[in-house]
Image (cartoon, rainbow over all chains, first blue to last red; front, side):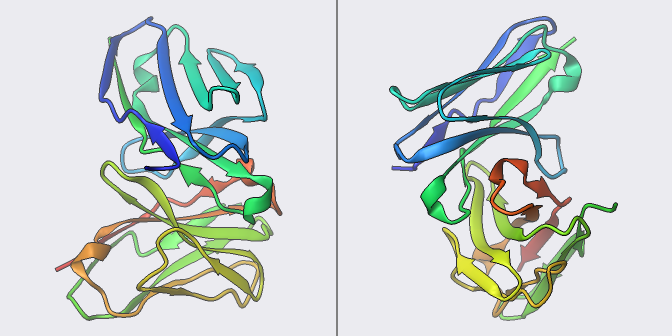
Length: 112
Length: 113
């Protein structure tokens, strides 16, 4: 079983829709939770991060962490065609000496 | 700042050949790492370094060597290329242990025939 599981999609939504992307994990030591966005044939870029549990909002994006359920989510409001990309969740723990564990990535397509 | 740069962008190797993927950063970051990305597998950590002279293995280190003689450079060496090493390779860096602020390079697409 992978430490981090993410539905690979692909996910296709109409412009303006609310998008929900999710990851589950098995390692209870994870404390840092990140979402990366990767456009086709480009390197990943950091979108948002949270430490421990709770919510974080940045414009149209909201990240949620539920450590009791080992479940994290990224919500995109008013989705735009420019949001079409692969979204990767990533996690790490304080005692793992720098190891970042990624989910498989979810491919999102927002249709005009 | 150029950020994280990787060379080459594309490479085709024959089985058994060796080569070095170059990675450099100009942000004075202590932490650097190499990942490979395969369809349906996400990004998997190959090797990482927390500073010059210090390296450690990640999730999939077999068949790869690294060294970190300077803060700026972190080359990845393929010792004897195999078709299973066909992948897209990304280098990343961050300042200290601020893992959530990793910056990725543009990637190297490697094909081994």
